[in-house]
Image (cartoon, rainbow, N blue to C red; front, top):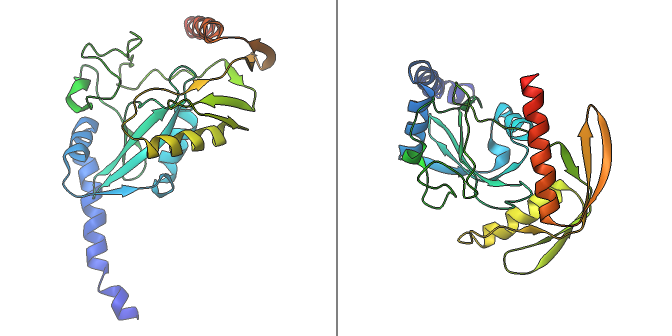
Amino acid sequence: MKNSILKYLPLLFVFLFTACELEDIMSDDELIDAIINAKEKVQILESDLPLDAKNTMSSDIPDDFFDKGILASQIGYQINMRSFDFFFLGVKSDDIFFDLSGRELFRTEGYNKNDDKKDDDGKDDDGKDDDGKDDKSDKDGKKDRKKNCFYLEYPVSLELPDGSTIKVNDKKEAIDSLKKWYNLNPDVKEKANLIFPVSIYWVEKKEKTKYDVESEIEMKELFAKCKGSKDKEKKD
């Protein structure tokens, strides 16, 4: 038994050395391109990701959720995401990339994002979302990920693109339901919708205030107020 394990040690050493060497000599841009163009890819589950990658997705990208993922052998991970934003429920979001250790990879400023985007990713050729918003990044290429100032009170009901409705009791159940529906309907680009009225909790300076929201228009007004509040905090 001992001898059978020992004979695989050289192969394991070569794998680890190659992976570490790649990360030492390649920039994030080059690693992302290598992942995209890799010939050896295997599909993975969210549970297969390194712990650091899972933590990044849950803490830094709360309005997106894992849809599909691939591992490019000895290079890194490409994760297809869908949006849990109130106004784009279920819509395909930007892909994110991780190296083998789970560190998120970022494009450098000035990189042409259309080079590695899918035709159906929801972005126009001008680099804006379908709603005309700029996909802003900071000087290091990291996206400006702003958390909402408010949170839904559950349960809520969702209308799916086929007209059916579902009632969900928490965020996890909502994400699981959207993921299941879009996996069964991969060619559908239309978003799901919240069924109003809903109740939200506005969070400011650790204080929560409850509001009843009657329509998507009211929700967008709250979102604009939230953005203004976050921009003010950033300036201060």
